[in-house]
Amino acid sequence: MSILKKILFTTIIILSVYSSQAQISFKEPVSYKLKNGMNIIISENNQSAKAFSNFTLDTRNLKNRKDGVIELLMTMIGEGTGKNNNISFKDRTGNISTITANFDEELQNMAAAIQNISFSQNTFNTAKAKLMLSLKAQDYDYDQTVNENSIMALSLADVTDFYNQITPSNFYLTVAGDVHTDEAKTSVKKAFGNWNKKIQKDQVLEIAE
Image (cartoon, rainbow, N blue to C red):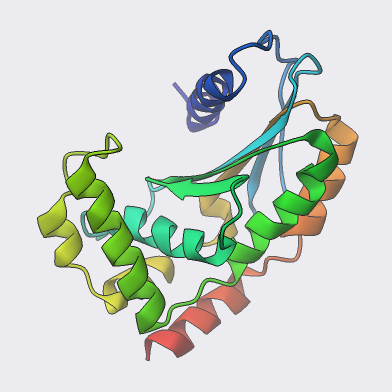
């Protein structure tokens, strides 16, 4: 199964859980890339009561990553969303579930969290503690390589070194549910179109030094 089909299938499963009372009858998905290489998939389902988005990291070409580093990075990104209940970052993905009228705004909020990650020691410590609590509570089915030992072994430098490998082309953003393709494309471009991979990598290098 191609990565595109796998991500779309996984997203539809997730969305079916979010909208269990809605009929899941998505239109043929539209897939394309932004100029920065970010992969976009849009699938309309006007019978859905909400709009959804799933942000997934494709790790196939990322080498030498340590166990748990992706999950810890996503937890750090989640720290940038504050107490926004419409956005969540868990495991290796980020998700939005909101009413259609608020989708554009929430996509901007998700993009801001992703593009402006705080790589401070304080953010790292907070995210690490939250992930450790989640593991101890066993409130999520993480990969078996993600455990208390692997998370405790990670340093802030490990996370920044991993993030330094990432470019927008490593990410898939799926938009689905009660959305219109043209409007969704406009929202996606506004949120992620100016995400410049060179600037992001330079910022991380400066922080990591």
